[in-house]
Image (cartoon, rainbow, N blue to C red; front, side):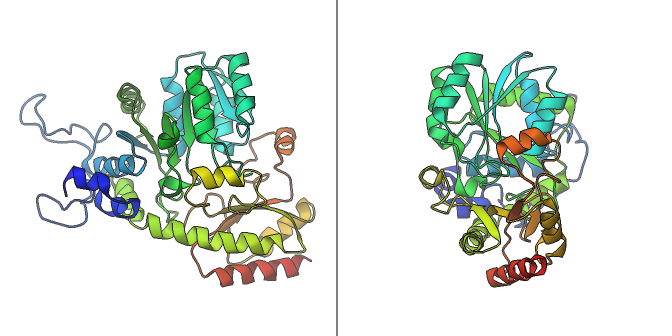
Length: 389
């Protein structure tokens, strides 16, 4: 299929056809796994575009082509994990850079910034949901980079990407958006003014809880070249087999995201009415503080729900140990439903005082709603509420 036609396709078609062209050698409709470390050269320096798999691999190339098209980017770079993608960005910034970062980010991101790169860069954590707060922080701290996560993990706070990116551009600050929770299906930050998009592909992009991977999408060729050079030098590349698995998982991204959203909306509304629930946070609910922003910049609300159980940490632990259909596990975005306790699990690396200031309390429970029958999921939750009452 010609590139001009591929560019016109809806995302539901792009996930299947971009990077999915038949194999030239055999006509195989599924892309082959080029499980090789090196490539034969015709003569020294004369090759077919591939020298060594740490640098490039044909299976990985297909995945990067597909990912770039989904975020409307010119370039995509895939890495061994989401954190290795953020590591490359940190190495790409000049030493001593000041980075403004959302105050409610993934615990692994917070840990990396505050324990690994804290001697290389300066980090200021702020509430990015308020553009005025962002602008004031830019004026005060004069950063070179702004790190957004929207929706945030785990409080699902929404930042107006277009508004904040406009402010950042005014002061010549580059903006990165971690788009993991929405996937390219529901949100496209580059179209809203961001400079770089990051994904943990372990989540919705792959969607089957069997691969660890990260991705960066961007339009700046100079920055892309710098990131690729760092990846080639440091080595956090993605394996051919993992690239193939994600290409395979991507084909169902559109229908999976619709199913995640449909189930999550029904569960969120049900939880709002439950006597044992203190409050529910879901971007699709009118009660969400940034619901209007979510409607403006997202085409859907995703599959993540945060709710606060009426009770203490003891009751939360009992609830999590009693539930059956929701698997008690870290991560998110797989076809199966997961449940976790951020304060003890994914965000344990954030000091308790800071967690509580942010609102990550001991009665906070995070759901990654899968694509099972939603009535079965609700029944599982109801059984568990009764068991801990």
